[in-house]
Image (cartoon, rainbow, N blue to C red; front, side):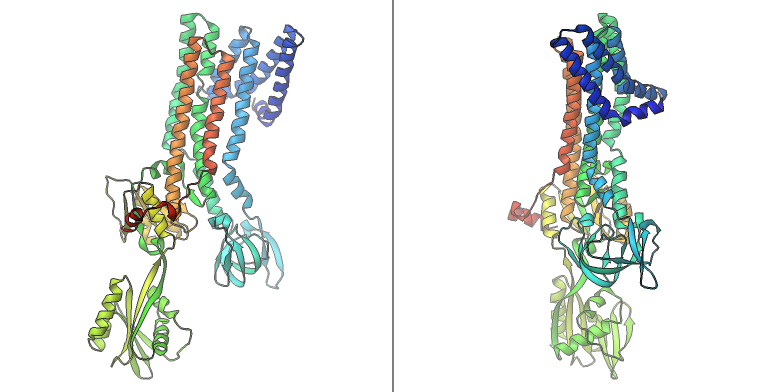
Length: 601
């Protein structure tokens, strides 16, 4: 029986085409040549051929104690054949097969985003050997640390760090950014991107399924196979609905003594559109997200995301770029170039993020600087038998003296949101103040305005966790320190460049580090769930109208089955609208009032 089922599945389209030809011949025999016997025989052949795969599926479902749609259709077709309605049997099985083919074709279309990603996954890599030659290897067998040669036009096969060469990479496959990225030694590259110009040698940090690209594919595939709360509810409903239709058909047959009417009830009561409507919306919505750089970890995430009315942002690395820069330099005494160069050299001895920002101010190296760290205050440096103090105001005042002008400048820069570092020697003949600030992401303003436009009631910036049980809260973060808040939020959104821990515990991942994608993620969630509900209404309304038409005498088995299959096509096409649906928002759509609301968090 299994082999027969496999045969019909494999040749589904050919069998449908054959039955279509036979139906056309039957109609020609009846209307052109008036040979009714040929018409009846051909219709019986079509009905019998069409019944076989439906009946086999029905038997399989009954073995696992499931009364499926196929059971209803099988009983209806067998009944039609028994009472001599061969044309009804033929048309019903033909329409049922046509519906299956259309469903398969359209679901393939909705899954195209994932299949395209899978096809783009790199298979092999040119691994550099010790003698300078290269050897082509399968990406799944490449070890960490191995060096890979990438030439112009090649696809990057691994995640890694550039150790030699430079070039322009098209990273649209990973982050959706169409503009080529200028990459040089020390920069990170990702599998699945394409080197448009240049030659690179890359040291492998991840390969195969462990790459960013591999994780994206896996995440979306798992998400499309998951079931939302709505879909689970529909599946439970269908489990009881189908047997209920069978019971109703039997009751109708017993009361009316109309066997054909009872059979028609079975056919028209099939919940095909109801069963397919929710999955097609889910797959299309998640596929749309994948195409636009937003990874949903399951359709149930969309259920939660559409209810979000408050969003809490981690600051560093999320709203800001996460790389502090020297924003202001005030030199109160001494030569500016000398003071800046001295500060940069002292801070080059520290690994503190703020120190790294100041160390970039000068590339002129000063030898023989000895430094000592003062916990919580800064550093003391010895150079040419002189001491220099670099740190907060308390360190300077403890080791030199109070200076009203210095205090005024420090307070001014602090009030502007800067972290402040002061450099001074003992007599303050060299005295400078450095304001260090983490830049706001360039898209942050637009992103916050988009969220306000979507109806988010409250936007807050947090350095810790803060949830109110009366609201549905989304938390956006990127670091290990954000993981507890991400794990406890109603909806956790991770920035794609964040740590593995943050990405792992999140519900939604923004592959491209663009905060505007948050509004897109919430918007596509709402539209996907709305689309699911539309399909449910279409399916239930179709069944209701068919039954009304049936008992009113306007609908028969074949015409009803046609309407039923048409409703399946309608819900599929409705779901497919999500594939190309993209919410366009820009600054021109916001009033000054809306901008003030968004930025006044």
